[in-house]
Image 1: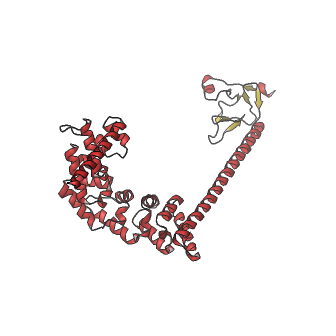
Image 2: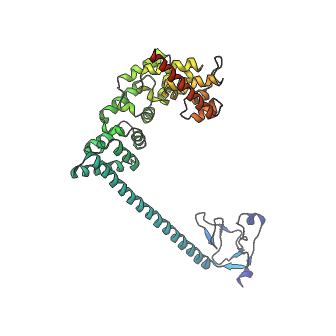
Image 3: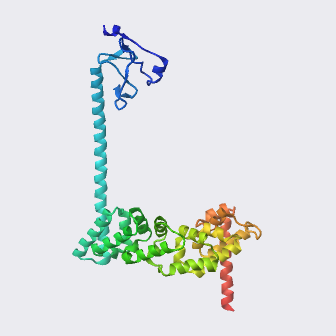
Length: 378
C-alpha cells in the first residue's frame, strides 16, 4: 500500500501552524523537507481555507484526522466545487446590487418628475421651458450634485433652474475656476441654494481675490473653507467692504491680527454683520462675563446671539450666583453661554434645573412688559 511508503512527520511546531482539525503533512523518503506552497494559492478542504499548506510530490497523500486520505485529484475536485459555490454567491450578490441600483434609478426618475411638476406649477412654464428645466437638472446631477440639493434649489429659487443651460454651466464652472470643487460646491449650495440665481461668475472671483489679498496669508483651502462656512459672503457682502470691516475689528474693537485671522476662519459670517452691532456684543461680553478679547476670538460664535439673549443669560447667571465680578469665566463655559439649547445652558453652565431657568425667563418677561407699560403711560 502507498500509505506504507509515507512516513508521517509530526512536530509540535508544525502542528501549531495548522488550523484545528489538521495533522501535519507527511513527506516521502528522498526529500529532506517539503517545498513551501505559493502563498497566493489556497487549499480548500471541507470548505475550510488553509493558506499554510505545503507543496508535496504529486503522488503524496495528505493525512487528516479521522483516517481520511485525499489524492491531489480529489482535492482538485473539491476546490472546483468550492469555486463554483463562490461564483454563485457572488453572482447572487451582483444581482441584488443591480436590482437595488435599478430601484434607486426608478425612484430618482419619479422624484425628478415631481420636482419638474412643482416648478411648472409655480412658474407656469411652457413645454419648451420644461425641456430646458430637465436639461439643467440632468447637468447638475452629472456634476455630482446630489438630487436632494437639486430639489432644495428648485424649492428655494425655481428660476435658477429655468435659466439657459449655457448660463448655468458658466456659473458652475466659475466655482471650479476659483478652486472650489464638487464637495465644496455641494456644501455652498446646501447652505445657500439661491446663489445660482445670482451673477456668480463675476461676484465669486472678486471675493476670492479680496480674501486672498488680506494681510493674513490665507491659503486657497482656507479661502474655500471661509466661503463654505458662509456662502452669503459671495452673494451679499460688497468686496470693497471686507478690508474696511477687518480694519474696524483691529482698530475700533482692539483685536490683533492673529485674533482677527482666527475669527474669520471660525466665524466668517462676521463679515456680513454690522460692525457697530459686533462692537456692542464684544464690549458686553468683556464687561459682563469677565472675559477677554482672546476668549471672544476663540469662541466667536457667541457674536451670532442677539444682545437681548446675552443680557438675559448674564442676568440669570448673576441671579443663581455663578457669575461674580472677580471670577473670570473659563473658555468652555463662555462657549456654552451662546449655546442654542436652554437645557445645556441651564444644566451645564448654570448648574440648575431647566424649570428654574423657564420660571426666571417668564418673570423677567413680565417685568420688562410692565416697565414698558409704565413708561408708555407716563
